Amino acid sequence: MTTRQTDETAPATRATFGTAIADPAPLGLAAFALTTFVLSAVNAGWVPDTVEPVVFGLALGYGGLAQLLAGMWEFTKGNTFGATAFSSYGAFWLSFWWLTAHLSGYGIPAGDVGKGVGIYLLAWGIFTAYMTVAATRVSMAVLAVFALLTITFVVLALADFNTSDGLTKLGGWLGFLTAVAAWYTSFAGVTSFTFKRPLLPVGARE
Image: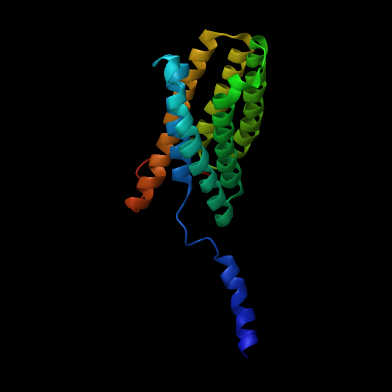
């Protein structure tokens, strides 16, 4: 009798696993937005290049670890899109932290550094482009984040390939718009929970 009851309740337990945790998306979006904003401020020339190391701590702790955790929680909730996105961009910021903090110690010829960083950014642009296709089924707000991020990666990649300050500044401005879109989407998620009703439209797909 005890075994039968355990077997009958097991499927229900599996079905509800992960539903008790909070939505990790606002955290992941906020971490991405804030780190992107600070880096974009450097790229756009709003602050001197000498302060770029300020980004490293954010890339490690917030953009990296916080997003990676958000991705793991999305796996728990069964959200393949959110898990793939947050885990990947968390890993992006962790790799960015390592790359930029240690690049000078690799002994790469000065003329080849831009090519290496360019292909790195282009690869992330390709990944973001196909995630943008998937984002069309999530919401208009999320789609805006991914579309803007795709363009940002491509422009910054071209900037590094061509050593173009103008394209770097353009990439900074595009990154700023991406950060604003991500912050908006995060804010919409947080306030929807705390106010128990949507305060901002996100254009969610049915």
